[in-house]
Structure formats: structure tokens, C-alpha cells
Image 1 (spheres, rainbow, N blue to C red):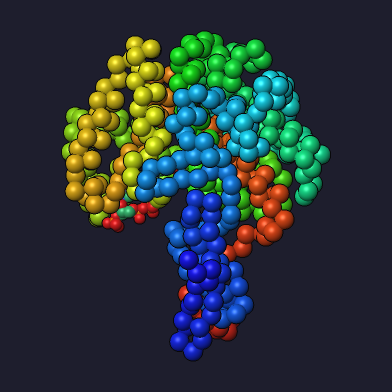
Image 2: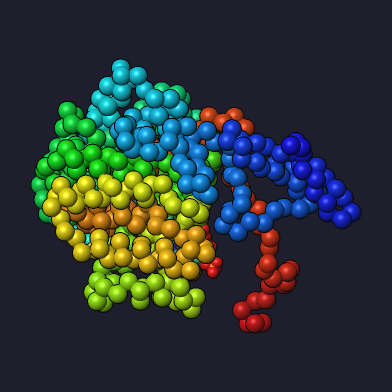
Length: 423
Ligand code: CMC
């Protein structure tokens, strides 16, 4: 293959370098295009734009492949655990048993929040959306860890911050849940694995199978290369903002229902279909109607144009949880019916719209007793190691620049200001 692409601009032909990744993905490097020609590229929604080179996660949407640091998601979901996967994403290799033991201890050592953050979390109305609380409390951590606010975090800083945020965000989520339900707090238990501890702090009990299913769910959410929230983290981090505000930015981006907020939206949609008599066909028709803004939540993906490999694994976890908890959720039947009909429907088939990771996760969260508006906060706990890994990679890339896209201006051309009495 040629190592340069030719761009013919009529009066000028220029050569642009071709870059190839380790899985054969190809890109045309246009970083010098404007300087050499005056042209920029235009790509609404970054559909076709590579924003960085990254060694964290590989996914191939056409083939339905997802790998963290080269390891297939199916193997990690089957045999690993969330903390181990977090380490793998962040440091690039699987931990040794000593590293794993120390890491678990270190995460557990951050099971206490600064008093001011506890008060802050407790101040919110019980009805506050947990994502707003989580984003605010995460940014507010910056007030208590001034040593980490400098523009150049050291290796030691990054090691601490990784364990600290994994430990503390879990506590913020469970604390807000207990407080918003008017329940007493339950302290973290360092003897337990990450998910059992979280379930204990939330509900005072943690069944091993259920904790395992939750662990799988978090593994599946742990990273997804340059998605909306990871890109947000990279954009914020590229200005050398501190890690607390950087992660808070990721949380805000995840909140939207086209991204992580879809898990809440799926459940609300399934609820609505049930209330209206359980007619899945009606929902499909609505989703296909271009005059109607309604979309089938939990369906479609920017990069998966084949089955989302995470959705396959989640379906199994969903069955395990429902069976273990002896929950017979009618929403599951509605979801299965909807999926079955959509997969046969020409509209969805033609556009390659398949159920995504969020289609079934809400049913699991609901079975666990997690309130619907907390689903996306669960996604945050899962995605946190991915954001941190993307941030670390960015900050260690000596060629990284502040993210600053260009635009094609379409507004008014120059005009003279008129005073109020002249308008
Ligand atoms: N229901 C109905 N039509 C849809 C849907 C849907 N869920 N998703 C896409 N389409 C249609 C869309 O209208 C368009 O049709 P046309 O070609 O006739 O204009 C076509 O399919 C292509 O879709 P798009 O909107 O151009 O695709 P996108 O890559 O910009 O958007 C998406 C991807 C995930 C935002 C979108 O599929 C969607 O809104 N899905 C529902 C929300 C959702 O489940 N989000 C969670 C994604 S997975 C979790 C995560 O990683 O964030």
C-alpha cells in the first residue's frame, strides 16, 4: 500500500501521509492540510475523524469485535474481574497477583470521603438526579486534594488518582442512594470484592451470583475507545485541567440519553409500552416515523453495524440475575418482543440497528433494586477506568496538543454596530 494519499484540489495536488494501526486500520493524516492548502476537513459529529492514536481499546463495529489491550471482551467477562480489567486498561498489562492484592487494598483505602464532600452529597434534594450529584461531587473533590491540581501530574500522582477515584466514586453513588432513600449509611468492607462491597453499601446484602453479574456488567462498560464521554475527557484533559474536573466532564457527557443515559431511557420506554398495553409494534412504528423524534432507545450504535458484542453477554447476565433473584419482570418479555420484531423489520435491518449494551442493562439494574434514575451512575462506575486510561494515555503522549477543532463559519459577514436609538 502507498504510504501517501494524493489530494487533487484542482490547481494543486498535495500528498498526505497514510497512517496504519496495529489492526490494519488506515487513516489519512490531514494535520498539515490547512497550513499547506488553506482547506480544513469538515466532519459533523466526527463520524469519520480519528482524534488520536490509542493503544487502549480496539473495536471493529462491522465484525462486532471489542478488545481491551488486545484481550477479547468475551474472555475478560468470563474469567476476569472489574478491578483486574481496570488495571489492565490503565497500565496496559494484566497485573501480577501481588500487584492485584496491593491495588485492591489501595482502592479500599479510599472508601472514605472528605467530610465536606459527605456534606455536599447530603445537601442535595432526595429527588436530585444522581448524575448531577456525581458530576458535582467529583469536581468538588478538587477542593480537597490540592496537590493534584497542578498541570503535570507525576507517575505517583497518576497511580494514586486511579485508585482514589475508583474507590471514592463508588462511595459517592452509594451514599447518595442511601441518603435519598432515607436509609442509614453502611460502611465499606475492604474484605469484599468491589461489586459485593458496592452492593453491601447500597442494600446491606450481596449475593455472590448477583455480584458476579454486576461485575460482568461493569467490565462490559469499562472502555469503548473514542466515544462521546471518553472524547470529552480527552478534550478537557488536553487543556491540562485537573483530573477531578476532567472526569466530571466525562460524567456530564455520559448523562445524555443518546449515550449512557440510554439505559434509563430504555427502561422508561419499556414502562411506557407496558402502560399503553404492551404493543411493541406501535413503538416500532413510532421509531420509524421520521416526523416523530422518538427513537427506539437501546438500539443502534455509531460504530457497531453488527451485533454489539456486549449486548450478547449482557443478555446472559440478565437471565442469571432474574433467575437468582426470582424476578419475573414483564418488561423482559416486552424487551425480547421488541428486539425480535426490530430484528425482522426492514427499517432496522437496512440501517443495521441492533440492540446495544444499554438495552438489557436497565432490566438487570431494576432487578437489583437500583432506582431508574441511578442507572447511568452505574454506567459511570463501569466507564471510570476507561476514562482514566484515556486520560493517562493522553497526558503521557508527548505529541498531544490541546484539542481545538476548526469550523466553517456560516454567520453574518462584517456589519457596523448601531446604537439602541438607531435600530
Ligand atoms: N431508533 C430509530 N431509528 C434509529 C435509531 C433508533 N434507536 N438509531 C438510529 N436510527 C436511524 C437514524 O434515524 C438514521 O436513519 P436515516 O438514515 O433514515 O436518517 C439511521 O438509523 C442512522 O442513525 P444515526 O442517527 O445517523 O446514527 P448515529 O451514529 O449518529 O447515532 C446513536 C448513534 C446510538 C446515537 C443512535 O443509534 C441512537 O440514538 N440510538 C438510541 C440511543 C441509544 O441507545 N444510545 C446508546 C448507545 S450504546 C451506549 C454508549 O456507548 O453510549
